[in-house]
Image (cartoon, rainbow over all chains, first blue to last red; front, side, top):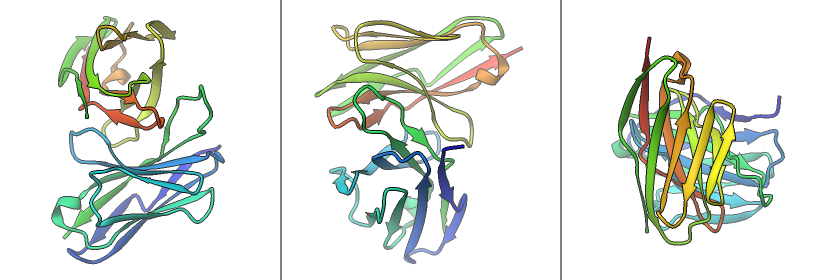
Length: 114
Length: 109
């Protein structure tokens, strides 16, 4: 089945220690998104790629970076995680085709910062 | 900026009908989407309204009034499995979404 895959499902890191979360997709979608979702809150868009074009949200901290080496893979790098960065990180994709409105979400990676 | 308002929690019984409202204030509005998220799970797409009116998909329907900056999600014949959080989300010109804070729906027997 075509899908959005996130590994690992749970990630534990230490305060200040860089961490990378990964996302892959078999949908061959043009657009990939990274969201941060804290407990009982809305998913908050961090950035997205349309093909190779990177689009950062204005309020995304510099501590968060992203890479998309090819269509299938996208990475979220947190350079120096703080306690406030503990959250669920959701990757999503969409086709980018006009009229196609669905974003397909992966299962998420829950990040714990010690 | 963008802001969306939806109730934090709604309760209903199996078999009932429930309506979850969403009002928004935004620039560059292109449409309103609805997503369902079970506890610990990923959001899944339910419905989208780009134009005023009603969209129906099985037991779920969604409505949009652009002039009132208002939409709602209607869930009919409620089932226990419908207990989840429901998010409205505004689609922006670049096709990204801004999500509301979500409404937790609790369905009881």
